[in-house]
Length: 184
Image (tube, rainbow, N blue to C red; front, side):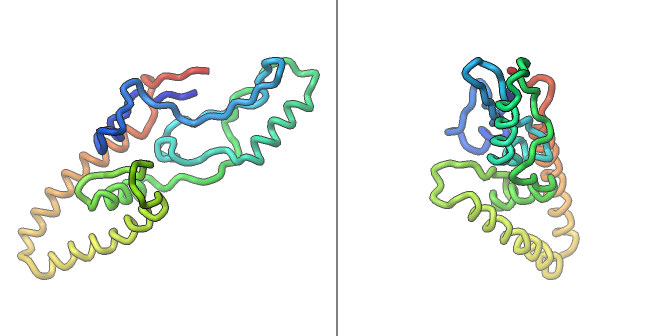
């Protein structure tokens, strides 16, 4: 399993989501009655899989691998960690992912699409955030057309600097590092 020790990106957005000892990434482990490992996979958070939020092996692929291992009765060693499974989805490009997080927080702060007490399902929240992006860009365009250019340019530069700090923070927090705990 893979344990994220740093949950600051999540807990910064909602205090109810505290993970004082870190949180586990998903994994799959199949063991037979003789304690032989038939299949193993673990999610390692990267920017490509949005910090471990997407890219899981498909159930049919895992079933096939377990069945293949069961057929090999003469093999006594455990299955190796599967590094290239057939995945159920692909991650979003990092710039789009950060933009969606910001849109979910009304471009004030990044808000993850986590499962909280919200009555709105995650896919619907993602669609709502996507619809906010062109509105946000249109507001900036209208501001440049109506207000004095130097005011809007100064505001845009300030927002850009603030945004750069946020993007760098998210970029660093989503990539696993050597400090994260790993258990086999």
